Image (cartoon, rainbow, N blue to C red; front, top):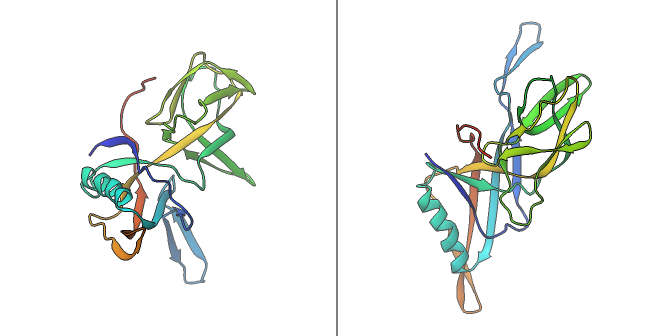
Length: 211
């Protein structure tokens, strides 16, 4: 498969749906207590992107994306309108040696922590450039916008808090090899089309660091 640095062009409207999904194995014991095991270290997002009453040029645009991707085979980018801006998110702590890190959002609640990884930095020309901070001070760094890896010029000292700000995307694939659409009415003398793009989050490319 290939990772396409491309978006579905037409912005979605109301009824956009996004859901982070986890995979939990639950075993019920004889005493009715449960044992729970999380199979995944990261959630998998699903999106349902509605296109309602769209004109032919909009339908052709997404049809072409589905064709180039050969249905589920190839991957592309999507902006998750529910969650696409990092604003001072902590992603790591310095150890005095490490310079390369995975960007993400470190969340801690009552002693339980999870790092939600970010794997695709936004290519939107209007997006602000990503910035990394060490103990609140911006530092020189290089970014891989296809993997969400960052290479900091100098190793942060042990215990330093690493945070970042910027916009990000999700790598996704079409959830199905088919792409049904319907013609339900006319507008301005043209047939208008309705369809839903069902997308699922996929893994980032397995590639080395590049700035």
